[in-house]
Image (spheres, rainbow, N blue to C red):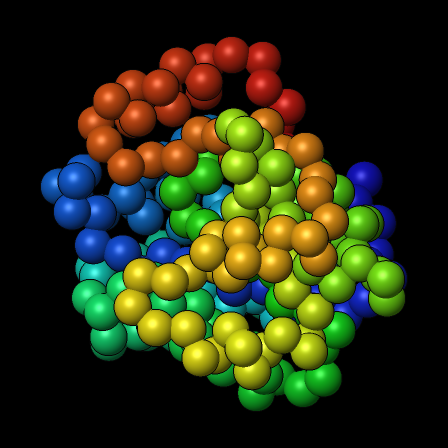
Amino acid sequence: MVSEPRFSIGALVLAAGGSRRLGFPKQLLTFRGSPLVARAAGAALDAGARPVIVVLGADSDLTVPVLMGIDGITTVINEGWRSGVASSLTAGIAALLEHGELDGFLVTLVDQPKIGAAALQRLIDAFDDGHRIVASSYAETIGVPAIFGKEFADELLKLTGDTGAKQFLLERADDVTLVEMPEAEMDIDTVNDIDGMREADTTEWPKT
């Protein structure tokens, strides 16, 4: 059972990309019975994040209907998604800031199918007054999902182009609290990745 967060954490799901290498919308791929975009948003909700903002861009006309009817989710359309991931990150943070005072922002991706509520809960549990940036550690690197304290909002809003959360984390590595996150190793960029996802779907991975 997922416990109530000790802090007020809003979440944003980055789901605006054009899936160029894949050739069709990864947001709509199904894993364990749910489209990836709905699975990512649902994981954030189940982990206790409120509000949950899903940033859409490419193929938003196809993706919005998938999320309709899921309470607690707000969609934001990033018309400038082609300019790079920073535009989606900043659009999501700006939307979160409109929802009142939050202690931090949880940033997740649409294409990490093994990330469920229990994985996000580990990040939330590690976030407190003394640990203001909490990030996933996997495959000998650090990255998202990650949580950023509210005091980093202004810096994050200044990001441009393809400078996303990962680069922000790497530049502040000494200030980052790491949480082992093997679930984050799988992401979906190519058809071969889909094959790996389908194989994982038949294995005994925790159904979170």
